[in-house]
Length: 304
Ligand code: 3PG
Image (cartoon, rainbow, N blue to C red; front, side, top):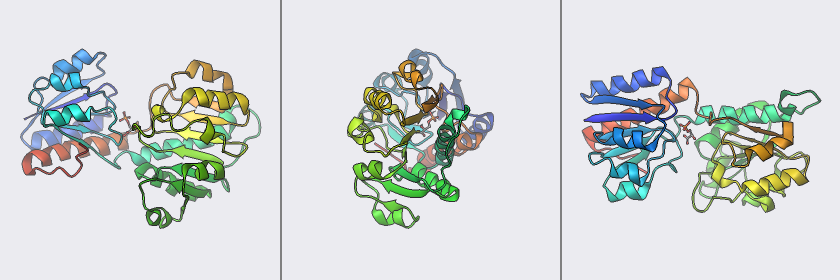
């Protein structure tokens, strides 16, 4: 069996060493493609692979068609919007993610963004504290739960809306479950986004929703850029000089957004899961899931 790790954005060395060890212990062959710059390189590398581990790398239909021996692809992370699931299914390829493995890293970055923007992006002037403010968690999955845990320690009042998570799950964490996204945005000083990018959520964070937020509003996005209506966000930030936005996924209108100065921040490249811990957790989980799949047929984390 040939196991390929193909990551445009490399894992930490400890993660690579750990993955290689798991693969070799199972009696399989480990191959690595890092920092590639074209889809062609990925297509060439997958030709001989039986299993593939990726991060946000785009596993398109073209990639799948160039992988005649591929049986399983694991997205070492949470969001699997980068995998063409239909193409995988048509070829009988199992697609998985590794839920929860990098969620603390993403949650810590979300809270970091909140503090950064409340302190005027560390420019001069009087800022604000998070303590006592109302935090809205938009989607209560693994990352949302971790944000709630950290925010509780800071002393925030925490609300959440999740269309799919039962209220009891939210409330057992001492978080107030609200009935709609509208109610969440209307109630909260800070909203942290954790919805996946799907056909239903794309562009759903729009002017109408954002304009419900109270004065001094802050939106933090460590999820996906596609869920935001970027031109409407720019419009609201132009109209409302109190509105702040920090994102881990650079918007298409980044250059235009820079005019908002300390009210706007974007990482140059997605950094949410960029910790050694998250790389090790997600990378090793992916390797273990592949070995388990080949040895026992376990498809627990299948997403297609
Ligand atoms: C995820 O969905 O797990 C995060 O967005 C992390 O993505 P990355 O592995 O590309 O950093």
